[in-house]
Amino acid sequence: MSQKVITVFAPAKINMFLHLTGRLANGYHTLDSLVCFADIGDIIEIEAAHNFSFHIKGPFAHKFKENESTSFIDGDNLVVRAARALAQITDMPLNVKITLTKNLPLASGIGGGSSDAAATLWGLQEIWSLSHDADYLLPLMTKLGADVPVCFSCSPQIMRGIGDKITAAPPMPEIPMILVNPMVSCNTQDVFLHHNGKYRKDKNIPQDVSSQDKLINALKTYDNDLTTPAIQCTASIKNVIYALEATDQCRIARMSGSGATCFGLYDTNEQAKQAEESIKSENPDWWVKTGWLNRPERY
Image (tube, rainbow, N blue to C red; front, top):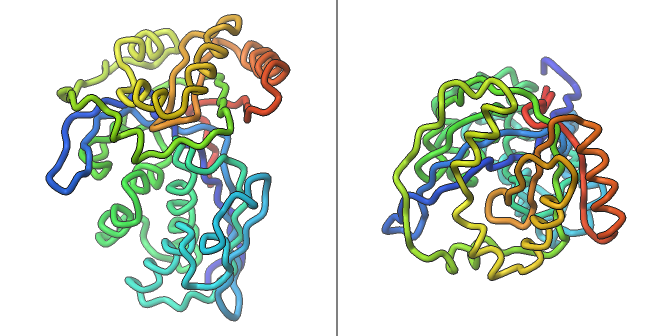
């Protein structure tokens, strides 16, 4: 083994906009989305060991179901499933201890599980000296989940199809941001069931979004098509968006993915921190984090 221990950051995935473009015969929806990443996220640690084990710690460790928190190789956690799939396809012995530090809320529209899986694949490839561009990777990741391929890239991407068609987005600035989750579950399947069935055509983003103003002005011409159906399922999402919009200097507030996490963008880090303090003081039960968009600092 080239390395005994490796630590990989698994950043929150933010859908800056999300348009639904159709529905396939198998029930999957196709989409058009600009995906960026934050410096807020989970941590995967992989350590050489005599046999396999999986461990979870962190503020949201207790939120997993029993079959997702078991330390055994047959567990259902996406981290374990990713490790198992990679070991099988590469014929590598899965003699590792994997520890997940779960800092992101579960099932919250910011790709936590998918990012964890992608970080696990990356880390195992590093330990096993495997190529990050192997032909088997995309099919393997797509089978694990629609968001895993884009999370593996860990850089701004245009995501289309069912998540399997990914192209690099134009260069973008780092932007101060705040993530807010009302700590109420929002079931993705239920959200899609409430969608009105209207679909859009793919829409290209401007080639020059290199400044905060240019990017934010462009984002204002897009939307998240799942916001209304998500609010129908989880009414508190509307309260989160209102709370963000009510903070001083918030440039744009929007829901990510299928909810319930929402984000706000600001001109300065100080403004974002002031917004965090304000929202926390008025909503002590919510999860609120300040960070930077497009600064994941992953590996």
